[in-house]
Length: 102
Image 1 (cartoon, helix red, strand yellow):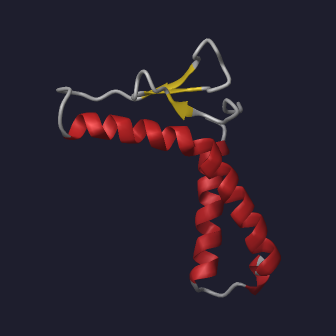
Image 2 (image 1 turned 120 degrees about the horizontal axis):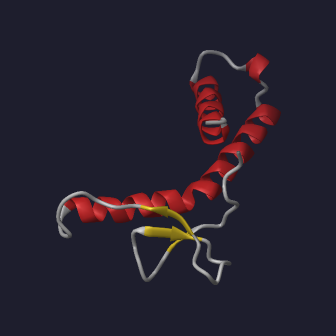
Image 3 (image 1 turned 60 degrees about the horizontal axis):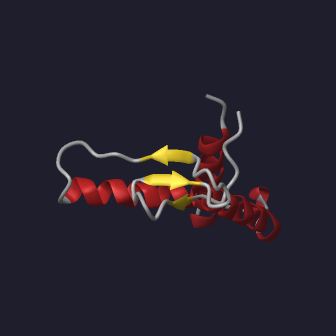
Protein backbone atom coordinates (compact mmCIF):
# COMPACT_ATOMS: atom_id res chain seq x y z
CA UNK A 1 0.00 0.00 0.00
CA UNK A 2 1.29 3.45 -0.88
CA UNK A 3 0.82 6.56 1.23
CA UNK A 4 -1.23 9.55 0.13
CA UNK A 5 1.02 11.71 -2.03
CA UNK A 6 2.19 15.00 -0.54
CA UNK A 7 2.36 17.81 0.03
CA UNK A 8 0.51 17.72 3.30
CA UNK A 9 -0.17 20.64 5.61
CA UNK A 10 -1.51 21.35 9.06
CA UNK A 11 -5.06 22.59 8.64
CA UNK A 12 -5.04 26.26 9.72
CA UNK A 13 -8.58 25.91 11.07
CA UNK A 14 -7.69 22.81 13.14
CA UNK A 15 -4.06 22.68 14.26
CA UNK A 16 -4.42 18.97 15.09
CA UNK A 17 -5.47 17.95 11.57
CA UNK A 18 -3.15 17.18 8.63
CA UNK A 19 -4.80 17.70 5.25
CA UNK A 20 -4.04 17.90 1.55
CA UNK A 21 -3.68 21.57 0.56
CA UNK A 22 -4.75 20.80 -3.01
CA UNK A 23 -7.97 19.10 -1.87
CA UNK A 24 -10.84 21.57 -1.59
CA UNK A 25 -12.80 19.03 0.44
CA UNK A 26 -10.12 19.12 3.15
CA UNK A 27 -9.41 15.39 3.12
CA UNK A 28 -7.84 14.50 6.45
CA UNK A 29 -4.60 12.53 6.21
CA UNK A 30 -4.09 12.36 9.97
CA UNK A 31 -5.69 13.68 13.13
CA UNK A 32 -3.44 14.21 16.12
CA UNK A 33 -5.32 14.25 19.35
CA UNK A 34 -4.24 14.50 22.93
CA UNK A 35 -5.46 12.83 26.05
CA UNK A 36 -6.43 15.05 28.91
CA UNK A 37 -6.92 18.75 29.01
CA UNK A 38 -6.78 21.40 26.31
CA UNK A 39 -3.94 23.40 27.82
CA UNK A 40 -0.34 22.66 28.61
CA UNK A 41 2.08 20.06 27.34
CA UNK A 42 -0.41 17.66 25.79
CA UNK A 43 -1.98 20.32 23.57
CA UNK A 44 1.39 21.53 22.30
CA UNK A 45 2.50 17.94 21.67
CA UNK A 46 -0.58 17.25 19.55
CA UNK A 47 0.14 20.31 17.44
CA UNK A 48 3.85 19.42 17.15
CA UNK A 49 2.90 15.89 16.07
CA UNK A 50 0.63 17.32 13.35
CA UNK A 51 3.52 19.47 12.05
CA UNK A 52 5.87 16.47 11.97
CA UNK A 53 3.31 14.31 10.18
CA UNK A 54 2.63 17.10 7.65
CA UNK A 55 6.36 17.20 6.88
CA UNK A 56 6.59 13.41 6.39
CA UNK A 57 6.36 13.27 2.56
CA UNK A 58 9.06 15.95 2.29
CA UNK A 59 11.25 14.17 4.85
CA UNK A 60 10.92 10.86 2.99
CA UNK A 61 11.91 12.53 -0.28
CA UNK A 62 14.88 14.20 1.45
CA UNK A 63 16.04 10.84 2.84
CA UNK A 64 15.89 9.27 -0.61
CA UNK A 65 17.81 12.17 -2.16
CA UNK A 66 20.44 12.08 0.60
CA UNK A 67 20.89 8.32 0.18
CA UNK A 68 21.25 8.67 -3.60
CA UNK A 69 23.82 11.43 -3.12
CA UNK A 70 25.72 9.41 -0.55
CA UNK A 71 25.84 6.41 -2.90
CA UNK A 72 27.44 8.60 -5.59
CA UNK A 73 30.02 10.33 -3.41
CA UNK A 74 30.76 7.42 -1.06
CA UNK A 75 29.53 4.04 -2.38
CA UNK A 76 28.74 1.53 0.36
CA UNK A 77 31.77 -0.62 -0.50
CA UNK A 78 34.05 2.33 0.31
CA UNK A 79 32.47 3.23 3.62
CA UNK A 80 34.31 2.32 6.76
CA UNK A 81 32.80 1.95 10.22
CA UNK A 82 32.54 5.75 10.64
CA UNK A 83 29.77 8.28 10.52
CA UNK A 84 28.99 7.94 6.80
CA UNK A 85 28.22 4.25 7.16
CA UNK A 86 25.97 4.99 10.16
CA UNK A 87 24.23 7.77 8.22
CA UNK A 88 23.65 5.43 5.26
CA UNK A 89 22.19 2.74 7.55
CA UNK A 90 19.95 5.32 9.28
CA UNK A 91 18.66 6.61 5.93
CA UNK A 92 17.91 3.09 4.66
CA UNK A 93 16.17 2.21 7.94
CA UNK A 94 14.00 5.35 7.86
CA UNK A 95 13.01 4.78 4.21
CA UNK A 96 12.11 1.14 4.86
CA UNK A 97 10.11 2.11 7.95
CA UNK A 98 8.10 4.56 5.88
CA UNK A 99 7.58 2.29 2.88
CA UNK A 100 7.33 -1.26 4.18
CA UNK A 101 4.04 -3.07 3.81
CA UNK A 102 1.93 -3.36 6.93
